[in-house]
Amino acid sequence: METGQIITFYSYKGGVGRSFALANTAVVLARWGYRVLCVDWDLEAPGLSYYFDEHLASPANAGLLEMIEEARATPGTGELTALRHRTPVRLPEGAHLDLITAGGVGDETYISRLQQVDWEELYEEHDFGATLEAWRDEWMSNYDLVLVDSRTGITDAGGICTAQVPDVLVFAYTANQQNVDGVLDIVDRAMKARDGLPYDRPRLLTVPLLSRFDAQTEYEQGEVWRRRLAEMMEPRLRDWAPRGSSAGELLQRVTIPYFPVWSFGELLPALTESPRNSEQVTYSIASLAALLARRLEDVGLLIENRDSYVETAEQAARQDFEVDVFISHTRVQEPLARTLQRLFLENGVTSWVAGENPRHRAQFADRCRHLVMIVDETGEDLFQNHDTALFLRRSVHTTTERLTFPVVTSSAAIRELPRLAQSLQVFNLEDGTPAQAARAIAARIRRDSPSLRPHSSRSGRYDVYLSYAHADSNWTLVLAENLKRLGLDVFVDEWEMQPGDHWPSRLEAGLSSADAVVAVVSTDWARSDYTLQEYALAAQRAERQQLIPVLIGDVVPPPHVAERNYVDFRDALTPRAYVEQVRQLARAILHLPEDAPLPRSASVVLPDTLF
Image 1 (cartoon, rainbow, N blue to C red):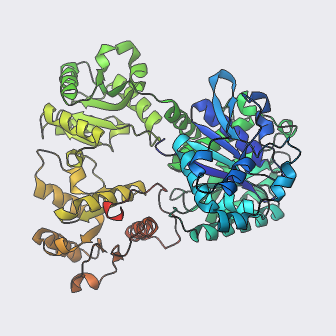
Image 2: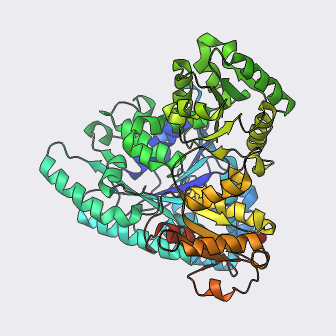
Image 3: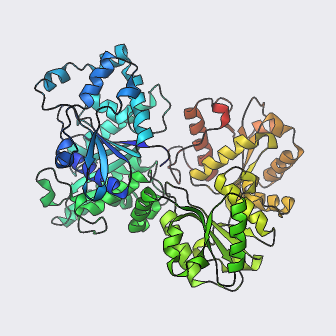
């Protein structure tokens, strides 16, 4: 993963299986190959280490309490103390993770030392907020996932864990009203506290974790509670739930059923059970682990095909690619595949050709990061279909980007694309040479020339067409990337144009096939005849095409722009303000109310103007 994320596990009451869920989630992630750190922040009632005691590489004589004491004694040294007291945990079969315990709990002075911790004094007199930020940075730089076990109830330490520390808050609860009311109140407090932090943070994402739920013996009562809980938890799911999904469907995927055998002691079923056996508790733990590893993205697949979702999360952690590209081809097109292989090498891209290892295509494809598939007019090829199906299943929106590039020999060959590849972008050799295709694919892989990205072969519509002046290209491409990450289909010419395209007709096709036109209005935009022409054309289509101006820089909007509902980025000078405007724009494009969830929750790229 590019940057780690911090996930707090919280519960309002004890005894709901919070630490059990955290410890076993950590084991699943570590066995998949993720770099995992667990932090026991339940200082008053530490217990996370009990799950790992027999696997500790050495006794944990110090932990979080000692880190806090060091921060009090020497403020400003957070980057030095963040990982000083971690303890390695050695799991079977070579898996491992790290643990920061609550502290030297065997020390008879632990309780008296803990009682001397004054959180308000730490923040006001010892700059603990800056120390905690330094810890966060170090943790996220060294680990893929940091799982924090929080204190229950309403406490200062619990507030730190739920508001300042996490990127994601997993709150565990059981099916009783006291648990539900209490935990939702704390979550609401955390959201408000998060908004008031003096740090740039994205919106806190929350995951309701229904724990120890037993609907087998009392099926009717169980169904009543499922419906009730789905209604109550729906607001906490909005930020990452896929459009069209129900809260009940998601709640089912984030429920840990009750198994009496795991109620005794501090046990790790994740070490012995299969994550694919739905009759075992690790099945539910693995679903949660995959959801967190994949940053709460592409949740529609979790609902529709849970096993594929978990498989791609596991695959993303372990992947160590040997070669850049696997070239899949039919027997007839092997000469063209060899030509592309040579051209790729000239452009600094390594590749394997399917014909080199016909009996082991799947194994070799798995060792390549990207897939190029050559398709001609002769019809579908079974081996190629298998290549594509396997590759897409294992790479769809994983944390490691894996791209598929169809190369067709003619426009007629587009109809012969395997079904799974029909919505992908295509390189048509009628519009260019193999050398141009190789250069464009190599550039896309290296990301050093976005203008050489392939154009789309799909016949459907776009959510939005971006109209902009050339001088605003960099800012607009960042906006396009962010809209795409939020689940919108975006037409921007630098992504869609390919050498050989007829520019005017291609732009007109994109403009006419978009549900909305976003005009990036700047001083340069206002001086461009072409952008003004696009704006006028979109304005004439008002009945069937939405027109949304976006204001940037120091532009003064012309009257024909000012009269419309526009999105104003001129004062969006901080990451938080920029993100809010991007989300506002996405909702306007999709005609969504202000509190409605977007199709996807994702990290945001910031434009150069914010640096």
